[in-house]
Length: 287
Image 1 (cartoon, rainbow, N blue to C red):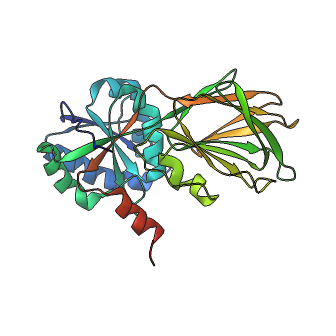
Image 2: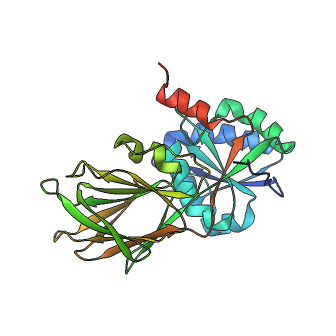
């Protein structure tokens, strides 16, 4: 039976803020949010690249990770994913503040923040621990909150990818590529190509082929204690796309090994947030 975590912040006096990149017009919203935190006696530490974007002073991310009690991501789901990936090793939870349409991950708008911080003071909130996956090649290591995609380089040809579980061959994928998703990412690219929705607080891999040549290739859900290895058999090599944000090249016969990371990504949510209600609203089930 699933149980909601009872983890709480040990202190709530310092927050690190990271803004959606390439949007200097976010400055006015930032000061509204900063004032709201300070009204609740929470000191704000703005990350340096975010600060530079709006002509303010900021702090190095490593210093912020060592200093703050939690982070706030200001933007959308993409910004939140980036912040979790950059900070999860510090074990500091992230609060997502959405500036547009409410997403699957960011359920708080600026107008909700003051009331939420009242609830934060009285421990009326929750912290969700989300699975992170670690990928590695012979020269690179990377982490994903949503998914790792191994994709063809050329639009004019398909790609062949041989897959192993714990060192034993189990499949060969021939098509446009393959998605290795966390439950968090089951509502992202995985969903758009027919992969299953998976409850986000579980620990499993979702392996979903993209436009497979054979219709017998189906999505696969695997326990997260496996190590999965994908070897690119295509002479042209492939590209590895991490959370839709970072891209790496993989050469012919190079392997990508994927396993669960040793630490979780942590999200701060309202206690009343209901995952299935979010699915109902975002996917318009029953309409």
